[in-house]
Length: 547
Image 1 (cartoon, rainbow, N blue to C red):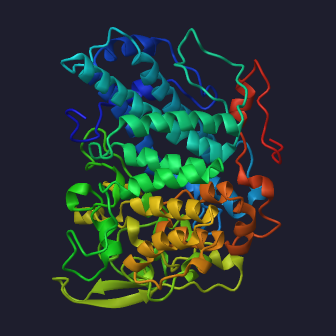
Image 2 (tube, rainbow, N blue to C red):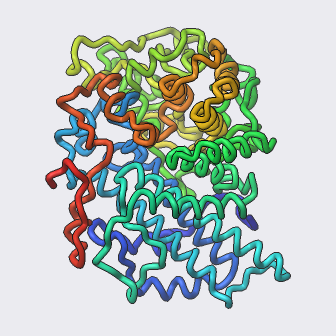
Image 3 (cartoon, rainbow, N blue to C red):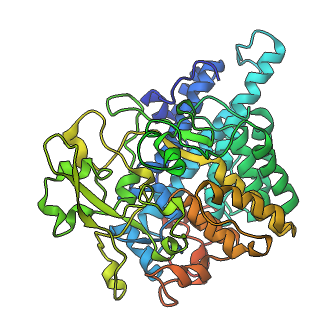
């Protein structure tokens, strides 16, 4: 895409695309914004600026919302992640009896996703205007630029509906720009089948009109193809799912990183840890399909990301570690975390000891502290543990181990080590997930031998033992997804799609049992503000939620 070196935007454009939705009117747009849109969407560059704003909204997924990332909504309260240092809106995910339609994290995410949809619709609809200058220089190039813009917007619309489908099930399907003349208060919920059918159209278009690799920070044909493959699994179209996943895998643009590379290649570590130490393609990472670009705090459009604060435990609260100089402790142990969510002991126990993904380079197992002023020698000052006698021991478990994918130290100011957020680029989707989708689709067709080949490609990279075709089951794939993608994947999406949410939450989450989670909790409640403001029609609540 032309002139797109970074995904950084003018705040005015971001405001233009976000002001149109509040907690009670999720599909309403203030008509005064229409004037700004008329001036912006007149040429290719204007549409690029509009896309930047939507990508910025997507990046909000890893900023703070109710003391966790937005993505935490689809991760905690599952088989492989429980709430550790809880805070308000996250507490019900250790006891779903407290989850209701007024939960602020559920409501804010629902509305945020419709802001992305509304903004995407605006671009898609206005891109059909015949007066737009597509700045291609000739008719063919103009059409190419137009289709590229529409493809990005459709990819992002599908990305938002994917969250809505797995989070809330049947939801309103909005495909038109909402302005002062088209505002409605009579929305009804479309079926999951209708949502999936629209996602299929959007993702197919994006796959066809986006390059396999676009500018860093943007989605691309590989992202669309991987999402389309997952969608076909949800639709029961296993042959199509395998075709789409293998198209991405076999294209040659991307590959699993199996050898050491990047900034820490000469240091202790392994190929798996290098993948996260070097998130950008420019760093030599050929596995990353989609990276979220970021910039340091004084750059307009940068994001204060909360991944480490969410997943790194609050180890400085330990009675021994808290006696040390904290900025120093944070600096040499991956940064400060609040430990809002922790990976379950079941998920950690799914690893073999020799699996690199469970090594000290990828799972925090001990804490170090310099023994001299030059920080050339260190001593171990504490170790992590998963000890607990009952579930109450898991509340504020400050020495629980954590996945090291999201470590961050301020590269400029040592004294900022105690800050909660971070400004690094981060992986958003990688080829390993495509491999796992391919394996599941092949297994569903009875081709367990080939499914094992794709699973073994991941396991060999991490020195895990290889498996046979007879080992390939849905249970094994779900565990392998956790081993490979824990804290990355939207785990609840996977469990809802495979029908395993309730069973696996009870079986593997140490905070949940049959008195604290129910089958209906596989879907979230429709926010009460949405139900109340939709005065022209009845917006049905999901079963099981009284309010």
